[in-house]
Image (cartoon, rainbow, N blue to C red; front, side, top):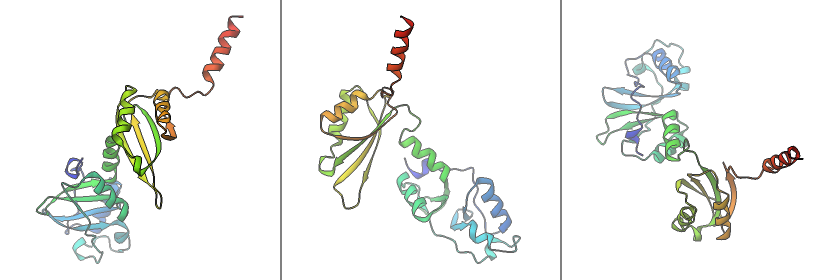
Length: 220
């Protein structure tokens, strides 16, 4: 998924002829702490709410304030991961998107990113989650996929997390079934270390045993 696919055209940018108050109202309306300043299609920079709040006269125009504009943006062909990285690194609530000629194309808010990441990781899709701890030398996604498919399941999404000063990796898999007891057993049979399991409908919490005991009581 690329930046141009998740642009929100519902959030108009700030112009240099807008007042500080208008900029603050715009940020409050869309629950953002950063807004792009754009004249026509020329992106001038990203304005921060904290800088505007320090200005006493809210009727002054943006072009007359001394606030620093942050030169932070992504191009329209940037991957969603690049957008997330910029949001995280600079602690932004929105990222401007420019086309290849550096014309302003639109804005990606933090809510847009949450929705797109949820789609990337199939958050809304029902399924079970398995977290494996593996060696970076044994990181064969092809073999892992074979194990999953042999259990009549499919991988909806996967994520690898590395650890500093370690040769171990943490691989999180989401599969398209919630009854994953047999799949967990398959991984363990192939000597994969299963760290965590979520959404497994067949985890034994004792309820089946209690139900059987109750039915036996009724049959007495």
